[in-house]
Amino acid sequence: MVKCPPIRSVLAVLLGMAATAPAGTNGEITAATERIRPWPKNPRFWCYQGRPVLLLGGSRDDNLFQIPDLREHLEEMAAAGANYIRNTMSDRRDGGFEVYPFLQLPDGRYDLERWNPEYWQRFDNLLRWTHKLGIIVQIEIWDRFDYSRTNWRSHPYNPTNNINYTYEESGFAPEYPEHPGQNRQPFFFTTPRQRNNTVVLKYQQRFVRELLRHSLPWPHVLYCLDNETSAEEEWAIYWAEFVQAEAAAAGRRVCITEMWDAHDLRSPQHARTYTHPDRFDFFEASQNNHQVGDAHWANLQWLRQQIEARPRPINSVKVYGADAGRYGTDRDGLERWWRMLIGGAAAVRFHRPPAGLGWSPQSAAAIRSARMIESRVKFWHLTPDNRRLRERAPNEAFATATPGRAVVVYFPAGGEVEVDLRDLAGTCAVQWLDTTAAAWRAPQPLAGGGWAPLRTPGEGMWVALIERPTRPEAP
Image (cartoon, rainbow, N blue to C red; front, side, top):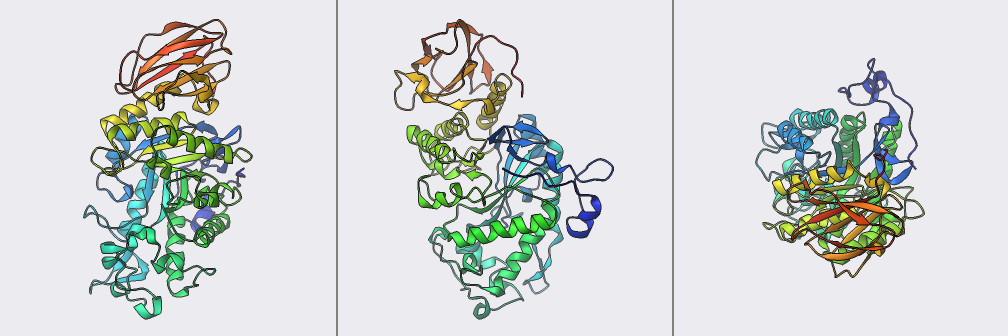
């Protein structure tokens, strides 16, 4: 469990952290007890500012701090109930507006010892505006795609583009044409227990320290070391320890994870995270979203069992699936998002287009719908349990419940099942939510105390909320 560090004053910030600190009272940094951390009452979910919080999101880019209309985009998301974004520190110029973190000299080369103020100002803007809007930021420090193929040719770490080291000194090559999943780029072998490349490592350390100098004062930040990495475990161990040491020196305790590349959560890669609660504070399960149907659900439930002894939040910052992409259809993206949510994930976000639905009418409707359910029953009080369903076809329905209080059933494409209401005696109420329109149907009576038939009002995606009449649920 994450321990709460003491409150730090602005003086401490000025001495060792960012000059731009989040707003507090009497000039003090936000109280450490308000930092995002696993909720002590149910550490499978997050709490922020002392209260449990469900993280839902969908944004149109990954390195969100770089987009020109960032503030308007954040405000639009927040207005629909989104409170969770992914922010890679990536600088590859996919949109033409991205900038590198290092100062570019008149001859076109970069000085890795000097910063580009524009890059860090954009990052500061993101942190300040998301804090104001109550949006949690999950930062990814390294993105393997920045350092291979055409992105490597122009990158400041490429020796031909900087004044700080040569190919011979750094061990780099002019080209890395393979997919970065091959893990052949020496950039990811620099740490002491790997190749101990001190020439490059000192610049990597310098970058991470600067990133932390800007982000550590803020209480609404989570840290993920890599984007879908195939790197050696020693790489992740080194940077996890480095970040926590830097945070501790600044009087902070932050939450860290790693995102491994394997699409199967049962891969040994993912065991590096779930078997080390001492090192990783939450689990990043995005790669499960390459799965479909019951396999997608089953893998998530398997993971929940693996961390039963030391529960931690399971985040899914990338939900794949969109007609325009290569990882499934729009329907796949929506189904995966809902299955992760109903299946017990603490944070769920639609991946950016074209690989996901990003920020779109469909993703906004899903988020609004989830908030409508949350207004009636809190997800952190629910436990996924498909044993409550029978007469169920594959991928037909998925259930989560608070025993004796409420049952929520998600139908990806209509259907009819029987639901176990033996712990909800008497007359219950069932209310159907049309997730496409984010609209409730009128409640109807449903007999409790046994197995009850449950049939969707029509085709399409529906959620049934079955409750025994009671007072509104407390946080």
